[in-house]
Structures are given as structure tokens and as C-alpha cells.
Length: 317
Image 1 (tube, rainbow, N blue to C red):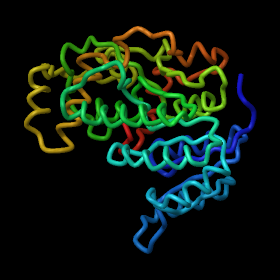
Image 2: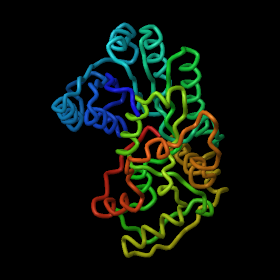
Image 3: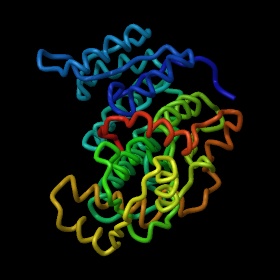
Image 4: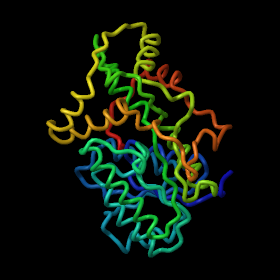
């Protein structure tokens, strides 16, 4: 089920998550716009190339800053759906987006930059909790503004975390296991996360709901994941357990952003914060919502990952 063709505007549309959202939107037939920082003589050549690629696909790219209020309002009046994939340092800049949408008054759906742990259900270590609190502030501002929304959360970007967990380019003899390694974790490929997001953005069933990304075949503990990795690669690793106490200490003593990274690892792999709570009445599990969509399973992700490990990139999570 969907609401037909929508004009979709993506913030952060040239980033790790955003470019997947933009490509999924175009492929699904939606007129698609990207709002991004103005290009300069110092712009990375790879970003220039991405701009050209997106434009060749039919994407309209608008250059501007997030504090250009009148420009934001005029753009909002031309689109139906806004998806934000802004990274953690820019999370609070979404208040400018919300203000512009409220004034424009025509928005059918807003999807703020979540796509990770479910901030309304968990409590992280202080460095990570500070990030979650910013995301919660955006949610509450969206609701107070009366803007129709969908929150998409509670998963790990498989490619990003597999790169962190396995270090395939280095082929290490040891692998770190966080805590006991038994906590269940929900994973999804970034392309599937993008497709699901475009689907829910246009689905009347998901309006003012939280959509959780917990595909059943993609919920696995770190120890189960390592076992599958070893089977696929034919290599055995020494497992070095990093205790919960050690991770907590790292979150307290490491410099930023390493303290945040330690806190995220604690939340996901020690506490199991992507799976350790029950769904509420306003929650929907995405694979139940779209049972006919054949999502990419962990087994398939690892197969492609072993054959061609992706470059480690920063994610908004």
C-alpha cells in the first residue's frame, strides 16, 4: 500500500545514508530533490561526481545552507515529503527544517534522521545518550508543530558494522567480542533501509507511527555473526572478549568521538538495544508491513561483503 507518487526532498542526500535514499526514491518513480551545501572550489571531487550522477538520474539538486529560512520555506511548498539523513553533528539543525515545514503548511510526511537505536525506548551511556536526547528533541518538536511524521529506527547498518567488527582489509587473527557476545542485534543493508524508508514515507498506514527495522532473518548475536563469518571466509579467529566494564570505562575516558563510539557499541552489542523491548501499539515492524519485499538477508550481505568489502564510511547513526 502506498499514497502514490510524491515529490520527495532529501536533506543529507549525498551522504552515506542519503545517497541511498535518493537513488531509491528515483527508482520508485518519485520526483526527487536534494538540499545540500553549496559546491565550492574546495569540494571533494568524489562529491562533484556524485552530484553529476544524481543529476543524470533526474534528481534536482538545490544548493543552500540550513539557516536560509526563506529558501527552505519556498522549497517546502513545492514538495510533499521530507526525509532527513543529516549526521549526528547536524541533528539539531533539523529544527530549522521543522520550522520551515510548519510555515509552509502543506507537508504530507516528515521522516527525521533516526535510522539507529530507538531513542524513546532506551537509555545509553552518557556520551551516546547526549546524541539520543538531541534526536528526541527533534521528535518532540515535530509533534508539537503538528507535522505528520514517521519515525524509522531500531537497526544497524550491516555494511558499516560488519566492517567495524571484522576488519576484512586487515584480516586480523583476533576479533573483539563486546560483552558476552550473546545480545541479539537487528541488521539491515543500507539499500534496504533506503527502500523501506521511501515506502513508509508514502504509506498512509505509517503516518504518525514508529516503524522498526527488525527483519526476522537479520536478528543475530555477535557470536552467531562471527560463526557465520568464519564459515563464509574459511578463517578462524581468536575471540577476545571486551568486558562491559572496559567499554563503560572507555566511554568515560576516551576523547570525543571515541567516547561516543564506545557508548554505541555498549548499547547495541552489550545491552541489545535494537531488540530488547516489545513493540507498542503505535509501532510497526517493517517486514510485516511489506511481506512481499524480499529484503537482503545477513547471509547474502556477508557473501557480497566477503567478495567485495565496502569502504568504511561515516554514518549518521
